[in-house]
Image (cartoon, rainbow, N blue to C red; front, side):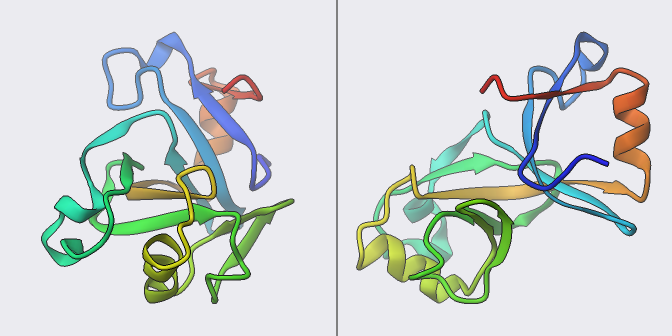
Amino acid sequence: MTKPGSYIKSTPSLDGSYFENSIILIVENNNDGAVGFVVNRPFQRNLNELMEFRNSKPFPLLEGGPVDQEHIYSVHQRPDLIKGTQPIASDMYYGGDIQHLLDAINLHGASEKEIQLFIGYCGWDAGELEDELEEGSWTVTTDL
């Protein structure tokens, strides 16, 4: 099973699909399935360009995946500022209270190196990611 904190990279078998040339950070993988975010695809707008966050500082967004592109998700290194987070790996956390997240950016000057914001996510049913790895659609990578 691919551990949270692992990165997977698409192989040429996914060329022509949404996932062509994608690198995905896995944040959850358990008996219910897996969740991850595409980390190498910038979203066309910044946070402050979204109506709901127009009073925020400009902050880059990434297109995290094709599922639920109506919400913002986060991966960060600031559990001291963002409460309600879930640890992924050493010094890497997932989610948290949205107001704390916005305060970390707007009031505390957290950078895009400390916080990554995603529109949407990638999801797999139980065993589906492992099947895709076995069939060669993905490779586990450290090459970002």
